[in-house]
Length: 104
Image (cartoon, rainbow, N blue to C red; front, top):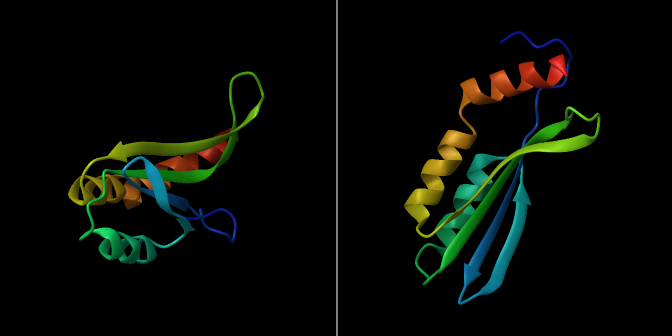
């Protein structure tokens, strides 16, 4: 996709690692490899839940309010989390989201 401006879409990935109902790690990264490292760090522990939120940017809703455009979810295994991150950050979705945000 040809970019109109010089700056490309920058996503923000927020990861929460929950063990026995307590958040033991909360981090925000822009690169997938950094999130992969965090997942590998806690993968061997007995994690009860993973939470991932991918924020694409801000846009206006139908009422004119500024809202964050994001995909979020809770996952019980690291494999589910990795699959969701792969889907949330695929190139075609990012390009389509950037195009849609420019039209708002």
